Length: 77
Image 1 (tube, rainbow, N blue to C red):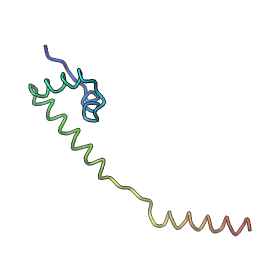
Image 2: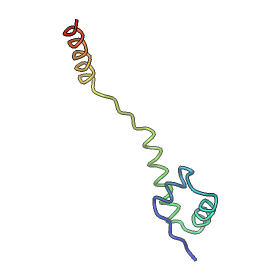
Image 3: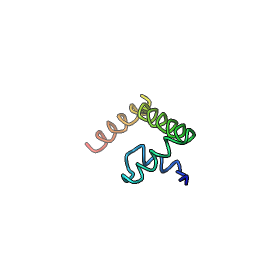
Image 4: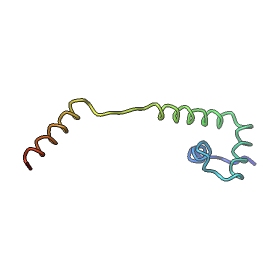
């Protein structure tokens, strides 16, 4: 009997949020099903890419915030 696993099941497996029984079932399915292995590899690559994403505000935004803070201090003084 083949158990079908959803992408959510694979994500939980990837992040070690599954029970030992679910781990065993997924690992057995991964041994037999190359498409499931491919799906897991895509999820792993996506997780690695998410770790690389770094966002920071533009310098203009930071300068506007600092200017607003200076003006607020002067106005309350």
